[in-house]
Image 1 (cartoon, rainbow, N blue to C red):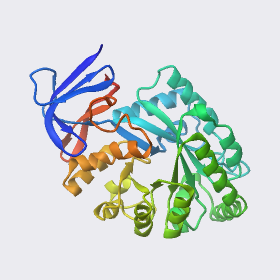
Image 2: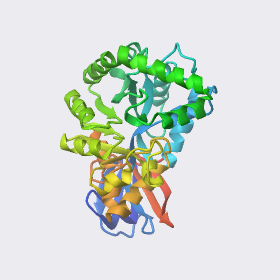
Image 3: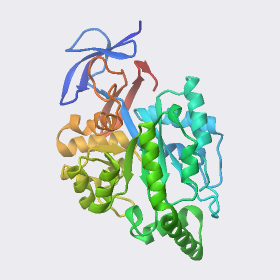
Length: 377
């Protein structure tokens, strides 16, 4: 029997915040009550559910900290896990790309997901990780090897989300090809001619494999019972196609039109936390704040900056004048979208995945992270 009592805290409950005490016992939230003289004095700090991250590229950054640098994977996985715990993230869906172009000149665009997933699963089995890890397979339809890479995964891999990705130049995220050119040439050092060849090659792959790969991905997700997500929907037609596939989570729709269509079809809208903080998309797409003000933003993802998740959620709490609602975009809403009914809310009987934080000049300062009642950061 293990018990932790956190008292004199501002509890972020599903619909409101209030002062009180929370008791953690045997990995679960055992009791929620009013002020108490017993326990750890939280000095009025916010106690919120642990953050649930559905889409982060952070692991890829750890295994390849520079182009051409392949970092030892076990060390990278452990460092990634510790970083997320230190940002208040207690559940993560690690995003791994499936669908590669091995015949191209870009060496980092080769298959890597299956062996890395196996290493992650091994570390998880050895209880070497602090937080809860699931897999999110980002299925790149504009590729050569998607079908074979998907076939390497099965029911025992704990795949929670499969997203349909289409990065064909000239549409969706990179409707503005100049933005893509800036990104690709800056990251990979391509010449102007090399970039033109890159674009032509991807467009040819989309023409050859796109429809087949979409159908394969939808069937794969359905077979494993994974949540199927769309990515970078731009038009109402994109969203209608997503709805036909059975998609209920839209990652980073690029326009107000697409976000509104998502809500019309009952599809939850997820936007990037960096978009909220920066006040706009780095790709020139719709502002997450605009969607929030229009009531069209449901979930936040840290995307490429783990520390952005909690900061953006508190900023939305300020925008909406409702901190419980802001925090829900990184706790209850993503847990619900991923089908995780045992976390994401402060309620008795749920997992004791919690964070303690206070705000310093508007920025959240994390003061503790608990997973199943054990302090991990």
